[in-house]
Image (cartoon, rainbow, N blue to C red; front, top):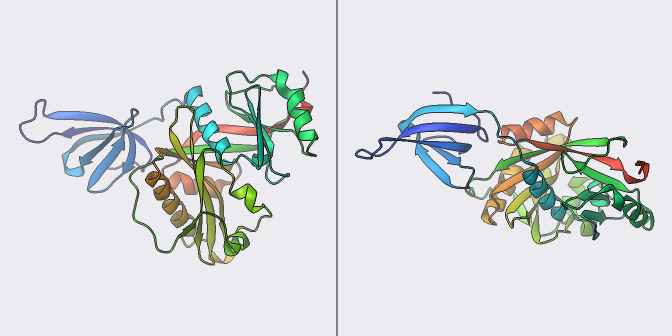
Length: 299
């Protein structure tokens, strides 16, 4: 029996223990683990473990439709995971400033139900006072600016988390990036930008001399906890040796230990290598987001 990839949405019909009435049961959800047992998380969050020998029917289902509420939930967690060093709420928009370091840390995202275009003059003024471009981060369905030119489309991918795995001794975790981490990261982003989170916790992972990554666990609008992986870099001489996968696996395990139920990544749409990596780890496209200049919008 062919087993779909981890992360797929599946339906399983399986035998219950002898004497059970009825003798069979069904479970629908996302496949978290596959092997001697199949582990499935249902849409209500329950985790069901089915011995592979008891499976009668196993079928992959198309991805469930992503609700606008779920996009807002993920985007809230992501904004709190990368809030810049200064942030402010303006009429449903979450404004972030980080001295110009990264688009993500210097953009406004419409997280509130009350976010409208009427706030754009205030947003533009706030960024102009800091000598920054008033970038808007516009996720699918949360806001629409038909007359603005999109920039840097991002694919937001997500997966459900299983149980925490064993610690990989090759991966070192720390609460802040050290000099070796910063050297491997190869980007001029201040430590205070990298370590900043709102209502959450960040961690920095290193495979010595080879690769680094950052992760943060933050809360959603309904007080859930999501893990976000970012700043993944592998030294050129160390590529194609599994270091990126090793780092991500360690960070997913760390997030599960902190009570995160889901994980997400934000990958530029033209980064096919990155997208394939995360697809192989069970991530699927959740939605997309684009940057636009707030001062280019005609009100």
